[in-house]
Structure formats: structure tokens, C-alpha cells
Image (tube, rainbow, N blue to C red):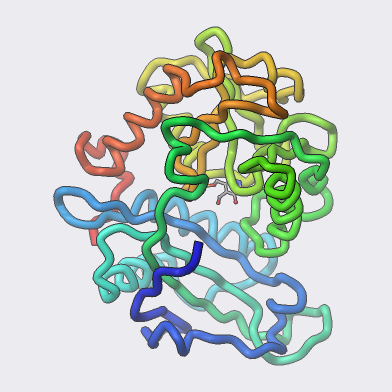
Length: 306
Ligand SMILES: Cc1ncc(COP(=O)(O)O)c(C=O)c1O
């Protein structure tokens, strides 16, 4: 999907024209993946655009930077304000927001310390991530032959650009084999996550999701589903999930900022339950939509109006 461009991008404290938001080819980030980023959605509500779980995304950005010893030269409040401002100046009603903190241009040794910490925030229109019918019909996925990085290799809790080389292997393998997405196992062989989504299964009315120790990204949408499950009184267990539990589940769905709540209809060509969106998945989709569209009271204070 090609970009639908917006007008301005925030770069190191200034809003500049989209086309001018470039980095030097010898920047550290380009060679070594030294970047922590976020993916956030802003939704159209009756009261105007609103950013979903802004504080939680900012927290994860700061956590990732701390893990990689990157000191962000702005406060949390300044970053949140800059994100809201970037959406506002681009006059976007609904959009995807991509803040990134990266090691810039200074020297090219592996040692990242001499390089400046640069930051940018882009916002642009972006629709359904896994296809336009995915939310209703579900997607066909495979279990990847690629594993998520072991816990003592690349830290999964940081949303680091370098981790997405692994995600790309998972995604490409799925696509060239005719699937929409891949599910990766962790280094111990338990279910981890999709290339860009967390995952839940439902079995006999109980939800299961892999724990943080399964090399997953601590997803904000995952946290949202955990809270909504509590609100809807649907029991939920975080536990190691063996691969075969995917084939015997009643329902399996992906969750993520990009994918929102997307049902999975087949895994390795095995139908999930009856092979169509299940009741629990539909309930979460409806609840998620009504909160993000502002139709339901924002009881958890998840929306930041522009
Ligand atoms: C690898 C991976 N897992 C999970 C997620 C879902 O996280 P979130 O709900 O915070 O978007 C993403 C999306 O950013 C991701 O890239």
C-alpha cells in the first residue's frame, strides 16, 4: 500500500514539509537498525479526532529507549504534545502515527554513543492492515519456520527497528506461500505472535494469550483486550501456548494497532473452529470499535482529543 502523504512531518522539534524529512545515508540507524519507534492510531469520533492510548505508547517508547541507553532529548509531555500537534497541523481526521527515536549522523563504528539521538513524528492516513475484508471474513495464516529472537538476544519488550528484520522474514515467508500473515513460535517452541500483531485464542469460552516471556511485543491492543475481557467478564489466562492449541481452538484472532482485532480463519490450511469469525472475536471487535469511535463512554480514558 503506497503512502497517502500528509503535509508536514515533525523532525527534531520542527514541523517541516513531508518531502524534506530525510536522513543522511551514513546515519547509524541505517546501518545498524538503531531506532525505537511507535505505531499509534488516531480515530475519528463525533467530537473530532482522538489518539488512542497516547500515554501508553509514549511509555513504551521511553522503555525501549531506556533498554538501548538512548536518552530522548524531550519530556514525555513534550512528545505527547508534538504527536497531537502533528495530527492537528496535517488536518487529519483519522490516521496512523509513527514516532521514531534514532541514532543519527556522526560516526559509523558499532559504538552508538557518539551519534546524536534524533527524533521524528509522521502522521498519515492508513486503512485496514490485513486486507479490507479481513475484519469480517478473517485471514489465512501459517505457522512460520522462523522463530522470534530468544530472550537473551534482541529484547522483545523494545519496539526496535532491528527486530523487524525478523518480522520481515516471517511476513515474506507467509506472503510468498499464499498466506496473509505468519505466526512465529518463540525459541522454546511455544506460540509467540504474528510479524506485527499479538494473538489470542478462545477455547470453551476461555481466552488464552502468550505471556511476555514468549518473546512478544507488549502490545497496547493486547493490554486493551485484557482490560475489555475483564469488563465483559470473559475469563482470560496468560500462559505458554503449544502450537497444536492453535489447531484445536474455537477462535483465534490477531490484535494490534495496525490490525486492530482481526479474526484468523485458517492456520496451515486447518480451519479455526467452523472457519469463520467467532462470537467472542465479534464481541471484541464491536467493543473496540465503539470505544475508538467515541460511541461508548471512554471509561478507561484511552482517548486523547486533538
Ligand atoms: C511484533 C509486534 N507484535 C505486536 C504488535 C501489536 O502491538 P500494539 O497493539 O501496541 O500495536 C505489533 C505492532 O506494533 C508488533 O509489531
